Length: 263
Image 1 (cartoon, one colour):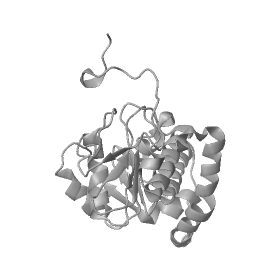
Image 2 (image 1 turned 45 degrees about the vertical axis):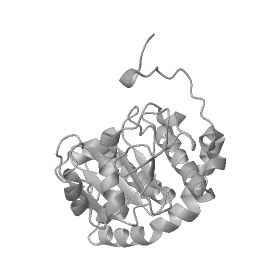
Image 3 (image 1 turned 180 degrees about the vertical axis):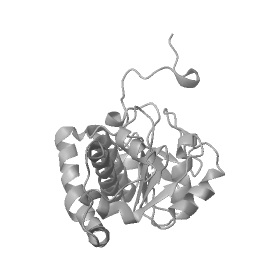
């Protein structure tokens, strides 16, 4: 018989029992939001096969987090398939799924260092990688970039993030910022909840995509002082846009596309 990773049989179909009645209402709501975020990442074409992660903190003192099972595509992720892991990325409860502890290195560092890091999302999109490799990083060429640029940190590339020693340097570079460009690697966002984190990531990714398009031709710089003004406006308006406007609308879109994420 054809065998999968670590000798396990490859998944032919995904039939996942619901956990809705087995977890608290608060945890279930977070599971639904995080599964929705995975589906929307897939919808926008930001997924990188099964690689990269979106994670969210589970309420309670145990320092547990929700993470995607490693062998599911992002469009297959459901609220019940999300795996509860410890700070090392190891499953807390028995699960038929494989997790990727090495891939959780970045997330665990930020979750543990920042109480406000309820959700952490990291991508490898072509546009994000291209900007991460650019000497000037994210440039103030568009309104979208100007809205998020002042809240971005930078972290130099150290190889594939499997070295636990890198966590201290990553956290130090991030500081209190809400997003990060991982140089030569990709993008990252931190949020007080899943919706807020996703909207930050959306703005960062759109800014990166626009920059790559703008640099393909002649660019014009914004008038002096406007990047600073836009940065102030972005900082004050993002949470409102995320929590009251954009995220609820995105969840409705996800339900229209495929409501199975909420099972």
